[in-house]
Length: 471
Ligand code: SAH
Image (cartoon, rainbow, N blue to C red; front, side, top):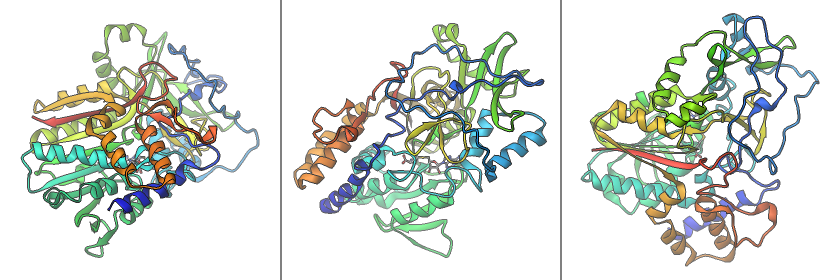
């Protein structure tokens, strides 16, 4: 077992040795695409003013993307589709609608047709950094199962499982707890057919019927089902939900205070046929969610608010999760980078480990926004009196309290030098703060900790976890 795990760690080590250096979504700092030159206003909608941001950004170590190319390239299918929506709608679309199309459009969305993770992909996430991440989440799920009185049947749901690495490590790590693994029905909520296939492979699934939507993972003999949404997952049994770097992909609406009050930032097509940001001339339906979010803001936050980013989809999803857990029992763990505060303007685009302009070649870059942790807490509390919300806390605190130090020590007992280096680097990336002090390899490959993360945008920004459990 250990050998198997170590071999796996060693193969993941390749992820650290790529050139150019890797940046995690969690170890790079965002800057707003609004730094691109503002467009002149159209007759219907004023162009967005440069945001008077209230936070200072250290861009010294960031890659600066080149300005838009002036060479005209033919529009991609997704660009044509977005332009046709704007044309037939007779006006701009919200940033949220743009984001949703760019990421999950069935034909050409960023996630839909390929593996976007790792050195060859666009970004890297914690489960891909080290097997210890999935193992520790496994410890959390077993503890909760014990607390629930060891129910005979549990739905273990993962939202947005990517390659399926977290779930595979969780199953390997918990496989000795037979009663636990035998109780599990795994439900993967995944919109991408390409990633569903990868999850099927990585969980070493064999198909139970001709339908690929149901299979058995040979890692722990567990049934696995795939769904497009959480609503499709059957209810009525205790449920454990894991969402790692899923919320950051849920669409956000952006608002800006103007002389006309709060206006929503929208995406339009300019006279030069390029996308550009404009402001809505009047309130939009999403303003209802803005008002709700503002009621949860602190008086200091309300005073300073000039730009606000909200994710109604995240609020609704959290409510759905809290209602389910409140009535069926269980818990949900949400892990993402974000802030324990209202968010002003965090949306960023990442392609091949570099920041690019949000409006540039949509569908070819990931779009990701900070997670608004207070809004998760309030949404869950509002939806059900039967859940208690905990956190947010940093990834480093969470993994530390679950015993990652013991796990890394145990793995280090029995590995070669190369594997040990990889384990230490992975450990540091998960729980360290800034650059790894022990690193002796090339500078550009220095592991950067995401546990409390190198703060660039503001002191509050970090990789957080929050969870709620049935009472
Ligand atoms: N949890 C993984 C992957 C994070 S990337 C990891 O940490 O490595 C986001 C994942 O969510 C991808 O699997 C993507 O296809 C999926 N996803 C994004 N938006 C989705 C949506 N609206 N519905 C279902 N899956 C979605």
